[in-house]
Amino acid sequence: MAGPAAQSPMKLVALQLLLWHSALWMVQEAAPLGPASSLPQSFLLKCLEQVRKVQGDGTELQEKLVSETGCLRQLHSGLFLYQGLLQTLEGISPELAPTVDMLRLDIADFATTIWQQMEELGTVPALQPTRGAMPALPSAFQRRVGGLLVASHLQSFLELVHRVLRHLAQP
Figure 1 (cartoon, rainbow, N blue to C red):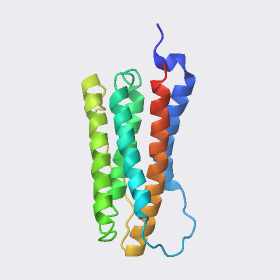
Figure 2 (figure 1 turned 90 degrees about the horizontal axis):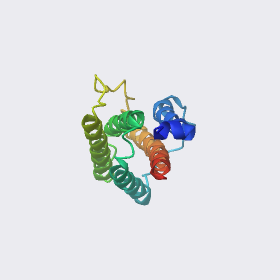
Figure 3 (figure 1 turned 45 degrees about the vertical axis):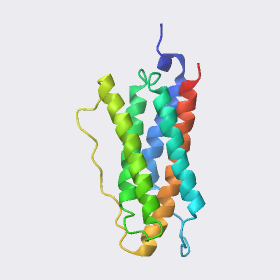
């Protein structure tokens, strides 16, 4: 009997898109932005809700992801990248710091869940991922703009993860 990857080339395409999305967003150039106020609390809460939603889907689908171990590595790498990017936002503002910290911890928990599943499956890479150079955001304005870009791309990443997980959940 062929595995799920052999049954659907679309699953492989979706997994490749997941990898490319997490790797390529850093090279995108942002259009010049005007002065940023603060990120809307509702937007940040929506991002947190999506992380929780994906975590639940990931837990539910762990068994089905056994034959899609490349997906787990890509997902972990993307989460690891966003965890580092959120860390660069440290000191963004006193009112946003708790939300950014909570989001970073949720991402770290999700990445740990994925890593533990890879350990259980015996598919952990020989070397743990390392972070490349993260952007330096010395000014408050740069941290706010960086926060907006990171939150926006993280939301897109999580939406893609959610779609891939839903696709894999289909019988």
